Structures are given as structure tokens and as C-alpha cells.
Length: 273
Length: 294
Image 1 (cartoon, rainbow over the protein chains, first blue to last red):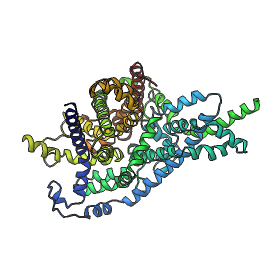
Image 2 (cartoon, chains in turn brown, red):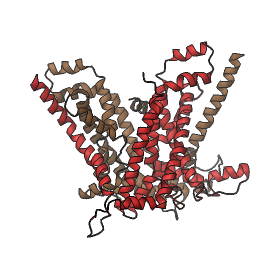
Image 3 (spheres, rainbow over the protein chains, first blue to last red):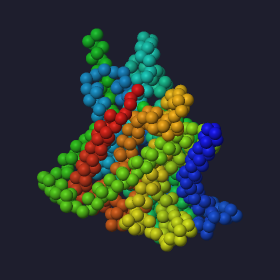
Image 4 (cartoon, chains in turn yellow, green):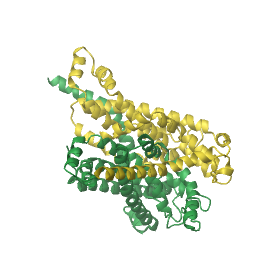
């Protein structure tokens, strides 16, 4: 009796979970459908609809996507390199050094989780103009380099590393930077991977700040490029816009599908704290 | 001994210096200058900014668009946060339990997280297109309703934006719950089941209380996001019609970079920051009594 009730319960749950899952993939599946079929099949779902690659070709030819991709790639690498460097040093200081003002400074770091550069667009734009950096890729990257989240995450990881390892390396003659390089960074590799994935996907997708601070083809990342491309609503067909949309999210999407487990685990690791 | 302590100080400060320079330059100092500039007029051409006291704030109080946008943003927060967090819990429970095709379901829930919000908006825009879009076709096919301009009607525009945001965020929050669920000892739940507790009781008395720290973390994040996520508005509605779907940060953007009124934009940013801090601090106090730390 009890058992049949339980399995009925389970069936219901499974059905609901699947229904929601299908609902959740529907938008993306639909975008893929329109992108790989001629525009005549935009709203007609026939299994025999001919496949085509033409929409992607049209989109690729209609806007300088190659340049946009290059810009995004440079942007994401620059941010990641800056974040790894700055956050590692700061996290090491917070985790293993005792100095006056430590807790105050740490509070200031955590404050950035609330007051993000994303919101301070007006003043940051003024700063970039002052530095004469408007419309450059570093201008997009600079505000995000000292990430409060990154410092916090790495500090938590560094604090779990036994002090004995640290001391042993020191006795063997490593300097304080040598200890960081030989003991802390190798042991924190999973955290770096997790943080790296989160950071790359975040900044690949970022839009508002790049929109403000760039105004030429040579600096625009794909998100801004895509918004400009799809804003010319006059002539561009839906299927072409959808192809462009998939193209811009493609690299991340493919990486996600291939490394799904790592992705999910990375986000989990970054979230546990 | 004294020497080592001093060396520790210097090393600590040196290690911290680069990050602090960036943090101050792009977060703390701008936050302070935003506050200062909110008392100044917008500099134009040769005229530099002039101290005008509370004039910007007076303008704010009389600005109908500001009030509308503020109310919109609160609705947006109320509409997105409970539903996306609730869905996230349900999703996590499903994906964590025994489920046929679990990895597909998990992938389906999580995929929107890796898509840029701009791309998401593009996909959904087509869904919402009147007459032609999928939404209208389904609703029209099922109920025979006439076509609705979901994004063009002030009554539905904001809700349409809320739906997109929930779709994008729920899977992201699910991950945090999934992580938390895996730390709950199975023995605890088994013990309750042996005692004859129903699934609902187990959830209400054991799982949910143990998830409280995660709920605090997720909801603080959700609040921040509800004031930060405006990318999709650019594509879906551009704030329209008649500001019906505009949010605070979007209005800041419009004021500063479309009308170039940076003084007033600073004032709006101050409101945004105050609101954000108040809500975050409020949440800590609200949850404080309910969170069970280990």
C-alpha cells in the first residue's frame, strides 16, 4: 500500500520535473530550430523542413562578428589575468598575515559584493574619461579586476591550507612569495578553476558597462555587437537574428555542454564559501 | 620578535596594495563622489558643476518617472525573487533525488545561466511578438484569444520582463541549493522517515530549516540582481511603453547617457545605493533569527 503510494508520488514528481525541464529548454530549442531552418519555417514545425546553414552565414557577413569575438576574448582574458593576480595577493594577505587595519580593509572588500562597479556607471565613466581610456578594452576590464568575490573565495581556500606546510616551506628557505607560489596556489587549483569559469561566463555575458564605455567596432564585445545587430529591426530576418544570438552564446554553450559536470561543480564550489 | 611582526605588517600591506588601489579607484571612491555630486548641478560646456544643495533631491521628489520606475523596480523584485527562489528549491530537490534522466533535467534548468542576458532577450522577444510569436500562437490556439502585444501593453510589459528574468535566474540559484542539499546528512532524513514523517513534514521540519543559510545567501543575491539586471530591458522594451517596464538602473543609464544629466543621475544612483544597502541589511536582520548555523 505504502509502496504504491510512494511510487505514484515519484511518478508525479518525475513528470513535473520533466515538464518544467522541457519548458526550460523550449526557448533555446526554438532558437536553434529557427536558426538552422529557412525563414519560411520560423513558425511551422515540420520534421521534413530542410536544414540550412545560410542564416549563420548571413549573420556573420552582416556584422563584424569576428572582431567582436576577438574583443570579447581579449576582454575576458585581461579580466581573468588581472583578477587572478590581484585577488591572489590580497587573499594571501588576509589569510596569513597579521597587520593593523586587516579587519577594516576586509570589510571594505566585502562591501564590494553589495556596491558593485556595475551600479557606479556614471562615476566610473568619468574616471575613464579622465584617464583617457574611453573606448578601449582596458576601460571595460579595469573596474572588475579587484573582485571582492574573488578575494573572499581565495581567502577562504587559503585559510584551509595547514600552516605546517607553510612553515615547512619557509624553513626550506622559501620567501613569502615563494611560499605563495609553491604551496598556496598549487593547492588552490580547484578554486581557481571554479572562479575562472564563473568569471569568464560572467564577463562574456556582461553588457551594460561595455555598452557605455565603448563606441567603436574595435572595442565592442559580442554582447554589445549583438544588441546593435538586432536593433536594426528593419530588414533583418528573425532566423538571422537567432543565428547571431546562438553564435554569440555558442562558445560558452558548447563549453558548458561538454564540461557540464565541471561547470555545475564550479558554480557550486564558488557558492559554498 | 618585534622585527618579524613589523615584517608581517609590511608584507601584508604590500600584498594588499594593488587590489586596494583598484577597489578604491573603481568602487569606494566613485561611491563617495556619487554622493557628493548629487548635490551639484550637471556641468555643461564651459560651465562647471555648481553646488545646488538639495535641488536634485527636490527634483527627484517631484519626478513622476522616478516614482514610477521605483515602484516598477519593487514589483520587479517582488515578482522575481520569491518565484525564482521557490523554483530553485523545487528544482534542486528534484535534481538531487532519484529521477529518471536526471542529468538532462539538470542541464535544462541550468542552461539559461550560461547564456548572455542580451541573447536571452533576443530569443524571448520572438516569443512575445504579437500575432506571429509563439506565445500568441499557443494562447490563441488553446483559448482562441486575440493577439496580445505582451511587450507593448503597459499592463503586461513588466510582467513579461519578470518572466524572462525568472527563467534566467532560477537555475542559477538551484546550484546553491544543490550544493547545500548535498551537505545534509542522509541519516537525518532516514531517521525521520522511520518515525513515519511524510515527505512534506521532512521538508518543512528538516530540509528547509537546514537550507536557511543558503536561502539568506541566495535572497541577498537575488535582491542585488533585481537592481542590477537591466540588460534584457534594452532589447525587450527599452523601458517602454511610457516607462512601464523601466527599472532604476535603466533610468540611471537613460539620465546619464541619453540626456547627459550626470548630476541628476548621481542623485538617482544614491537612491539605488541606499535602497540596496537598506534591503541587504534588513534581510540579515530578518533572517538572523531563522538561520541555524552549524
